[in-house]
Length: 154
Image 1 (tube, helix red, strand yellow):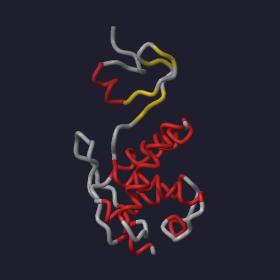
Image 2: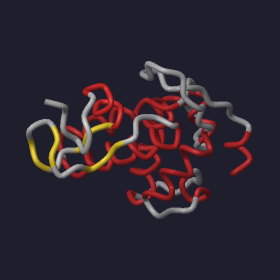
Image 3: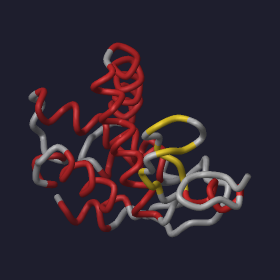
């Protein structure tokens, strides 16, 4: 089943304003499998239990966000037979993100991890940023403001 992932090309993010390294579909699937502590073969296998179906649905959304694959290519990358499974998975993730802060936090963490793998925005934890304590800000924003240690020059 792992050979299916190797044969599927991947693109760049649809929302990325600058050119970044392309993620392969197998990298996205591996990141999701690692996040949910599953093996890739289990994630792309036929198991329909909740412990596997939810991570698989998250993988469909992450593949949509971080590659230029169509729904049919995503379905084949995840070992699914029909593209409608991908569409359903994307809808379920959107629905659950609205219902639960935990699922939304998982989504955001996975998204951040994949952005870092692509060479996206790097985030730094500061004790003080933008007038609020313990906010996460990007290095790029700090450099644009000309500040050091998370504080703009005055």
